[in-house]
Image (cartoon, rainbow over all chains, first blue to last red; front, side):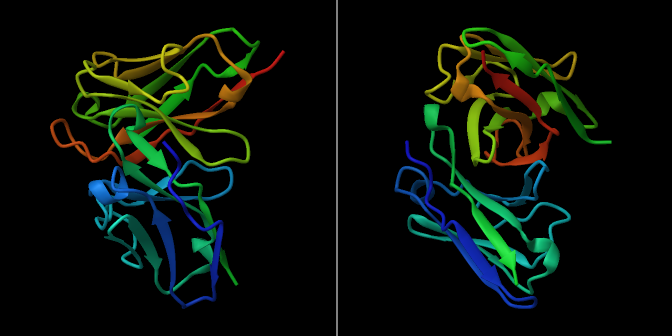
Length: 111
Length: 123
């Protein structure tokens, strides 16, 4: 099973919005609503930002929102802040021995 | 405090074995599926294995199937990963992580992560 496809980089200025895409197939992203997004700062463990496509865990700002259309999921970060600069990974349930697959990651730069 | 604490990583020769542990505190450990996720140096995240809340069901990524065994002891709130026949490509930080969903309704999303333990396979 191939990794989900993410752009390697994205950027935006403070206060702007940026959207990161995550493309899979009908066997993973398109076939299930178990899509999640993680934020990872250098040297730190990942942090769950959204799950089940658009749900946010307690404590995650509503500036972070998830969505899905067909085989492509997206994470939108609104009102960009300096602390949003990090790597972002999407993941999807795919079943069996491909239980969860990750995207290759996107480095978000706040200009 | 909600916490997952991994231990057991280190340097091992190719073909060797290691056993990772993950001690949970502050969570209803027996109510959640648990996972191991790894990250090779400078690389992205890779799911390794999952175990159901009861421990009765496990799945593994193809590259570790038959070499790694995941287990849990709900009486000790501890998760394990027995790694045998280790290869250079297994070198990574290994994280244990908790499913945000509960037994019967797994979300396949990881809301609590440990700090990670480094496994280096090299001669």
